[in-house]
Length: 547
Ligand code: GDP
Image (cartoon, rainbow, N blue to C red; front, side, top):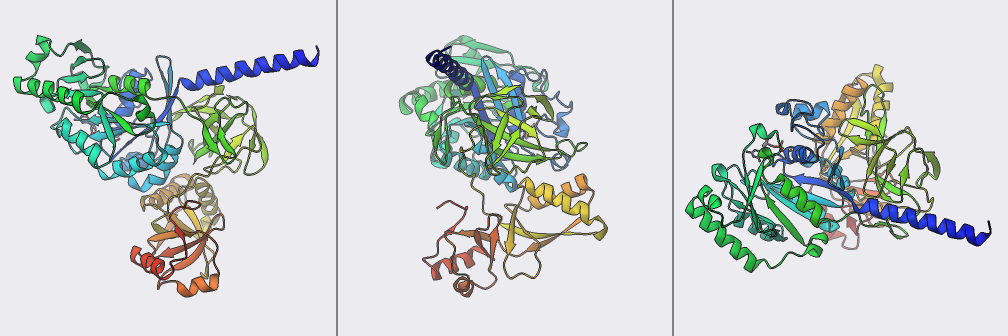
């Protein structure tokens, strides 16, 4: 075979690989659900799985819904506290699509964990309790999504209960979040009188029937809005209101622009009731139709196309002891380019090491399956002892490095002490493992008597989880010594220590983060303000590397 024939073969192979990757990537939808606690995120997750065929009966994964046992809630502490802490991945198919649903913790103390998950998704579904409207946590999470410019789909939930009017809810999206809303469906009544929704794009009414405990897919009958059955079901007043509102929307909101959705400028809005499966399938279909597959990711060297011949991905979560029997550590990677296959060799770019990705899995809640291949958008989890941290790049290209995932500025600080000197070894091991998960941040104080690391968290529950896990997974009791600082800022550039120390307000302290970047800890916002006014030329950052 001469060289030119070889080149043609290689080119043909590359082309077909690139086509395969692009084809596979385009049918991926990698997303998360964000909401204020109790708005219905867990319920909606379960119902999406039901419609995706991943569950036969909603609530059947672990039988009793009242224990809050769903496929994505698995840690003991989550059950105890009734909150979702760990981010797990649920992969399922719907039609030709492959969906990767990343679970996000709802509690505000875990906003940093949620933030990292949001770095790994291409779209979000924002669930709002229609009785309460936009709540604080929704707002915070929404802001993160907006910064990333990712498409946001809105699901107004719990329409089976007395709700705010749909116009009020739309108005809130526009006024409170400053987000243009396009209602794709419009509810017919609410509370006891919630009868279905009108699909504005297809111009058809979907009438729903209640099903026992929302276990099965809800049967749907599709009608024209002028159908006498629709009129008979609704009171005359509700019917007239709905018809009027729909006409008003058509006038005021213009046409549907998918491009604006893809740029995060417009949110398509759906109404329903996750508990009763009302509107869930319309949401799912609308989401698939109007969202897009993964887009290229930015590395330090530039944008990396999906069909790059090199496989690449980044770590967005590290979880130790997913299986307490094996004391293992699972590293979750979002695939960004190329094709992953089992046992492939990759570069751990930060360490400059080559590693074989053997114990690779696709993960479904608690369950794992061997992952044979994965494409951009997919999440793979692999079990390893190697040192992986959130933000690390893995790639077959040793020079590819994705941009760092920014950290949140912690607001609570503490030292963690071992309660029993006999358990020192287990304590050290436990702390080391849990810190490798980045569940809290680590700092070192200057001019402090002990060389104990100072732990920083966005909310105190993070410390509680750390202590709980030390006890549960390593059998050690610990004691938390809370420290009085409330605000931390990174310094833009290293300053002369002596000058800096002199200008620190009372109670403030200097330290460094794990990468040796200098930080200042302030006892209050007021103290930070005072310092900033006195030192206008000192630039302080609320996230390292972010100006
Ligand atoms: P999360 O904290 O956002 O995950 O919320 P959950 O999914 O756990 O729901 C919180 C509560 O609201 C639970 O008691 C659910 O049964 C209930 N819930 C969820 N969706 C609906 C709905 O559509 N209608 C009604 N009435 N209750 C709902």
